[in-house]
Image (cartoon, rainbow, N blue to C red; front, side, top):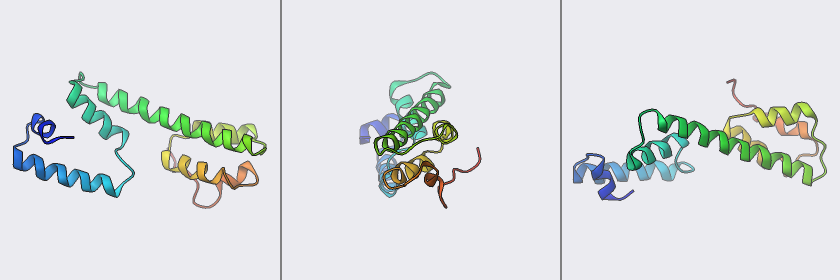
Length: 126
């Protein structure tokens, strides 16, 4: 985001610059923006109606989860690993992006589909 964009959000130039530096440092510590942050920024820039940003973010996160789940299943199938229906359902219904990322990494090395869910791989209860 540019200084002009930050100022468009109503921040004074010095405060906008300080806020941008703070936000960029936070983003660099993470793996990018969350779906909610992306929706908030897009909503501000594109002047979305109230409530639309939340709907957009939920759909965006759902789409990311679905893509990761498809990647896990594709990797297992490409490696010739049988995927029982209960494992397929667990993967497809998971919405925890961190758990799905871990399972995707594991899908490249496990010897059975059940091995995806080893210690530390469990998604927190929803």
